[in-house]
Image 1 (spheres, rainbow over the protein chains, first blue to last red):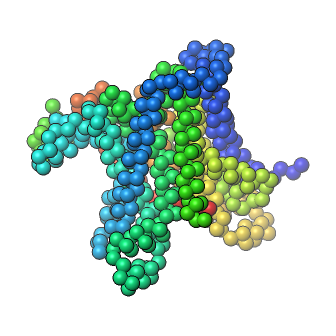
Image 2: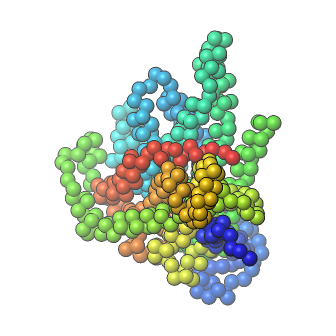
Image 3: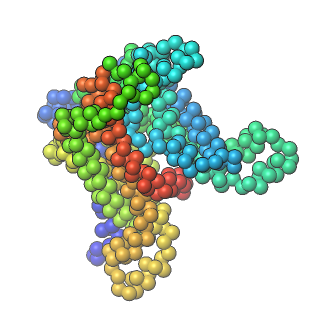
Length: 290
Length: 236
């Protein structure tokens, strides 16, 4: 049989993805049905299949539900808010009235390319109750000191604000492209018909942007469910576990306590949530088109 | 105590003392070097792997092509955290923990990269490839003499994405690098944070060292980066 050149081009990437992605995914699935722990790491014969035990343990554990509800809290608030901010920024940058668009676009986009760990550290100081810039600024409008990261009520909102600031530039760029694809005539026609700004926004801009918005919602949601570095750096999941996310919980169980079976089960719950979320988004999109 | 925040926005005096501390006493140069080397290695290797595969998916017919491609695309919904535990055990067996290999291996190829290259290469006319073949070019010559030069814009785009992604990555290096001399900048910074919570000036300087290189890279190549976002958002 003659060796086909196409396999030469495919082999490196496909082998790498198969060995270092697909095999681990399958292994993780298997490990999630075992009691694989620190003893098994030293000696692979020391683990047993325990069926659905890890999943039962998980659903019995208060901390897991806490992590799950924190993560949902984060995604449900951060997601729509950051998409709204992205759209707002995109519309401002797309309007004819704004000058120096290039500079604004650059400045708005900057946070996206920064290192999350580094900006989390900077924001930790911004949120400092005594010396932080935020409380300093708020003191001018008469708002009393808020213990942003130390108060279980404010800790998650603090992380939400940081992540909106960090991420909105990315979706803004996609929205700008979407806005530029809307034919100018639509707006002109609407204007002649006497539609006001709000009507033009809800009857033209939003429907025309719908496909873009679905795409953005999916990628934003997938990213936000993987919340990790912000709570790891700023709060270590505290106070009172108020910022413990699914991935942080998975990391702690797997790589601090080496409960690998249990931790794999957490990872699969995350996977199922993301998959379900994606399918729902796609279903909404299909229904809209039909 | 950080006087900085008490007195107002601007500091009383400017000094480079924090940077001196970071580079001399805390040996951040080692972490900077790690970050540069790891990010460059991952970028170069994955660019070769992804561009070859992207070319194959764009311009060849082979058995199972559509099935494989669909499988790859659907795998993008699996979060990388799922793979981390088995991958950790695997790398431990290979003796790769705490080495550059631990970061390189999972980054050798990725679906997003293959997809990006494929989209771009599909637009290159087949006639170019055919005429090269008539002139006696081998498949590999077609790849690196025609496809690679023509696909250079998308390769640059992918290179920035990969470099920045690897540079900014935190969770995976945190897991597989546990010797402070092997840390990348974000991991080193997170570690410093634990010891120097009361030293904002030092931490700010560390953050600047971490962010500045990628920011410069972005400023120089922003056109390509922005294009990449658009291309990534184009649906099939």
